[in-house]
Length: 68
Image 1: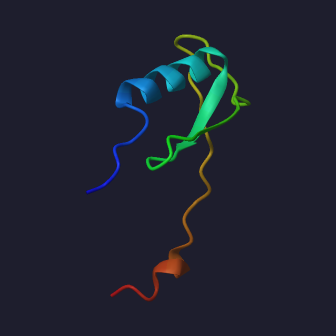
Image 2: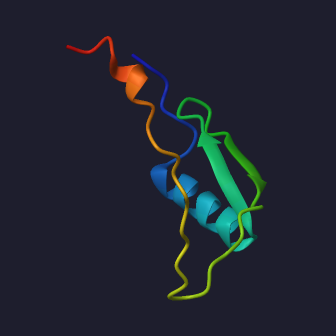
Image 3: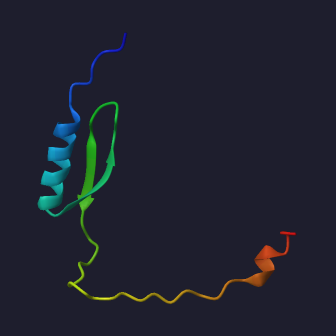
């Protein structure tokens, strides 16, 4: 029989919510230990309704030569 985890889903939810409110970005959560890795949120925030466009380079047709 396995040992019960020392944390609950509610504990993780509260911790993630607190990190986000503090302006941090959650990077990963270890399901075995409950360790939550966070990083500074360096992504710019967008204003409501702001649209971001990104230019995508054209596909290289030669990359698909091996596909029949």
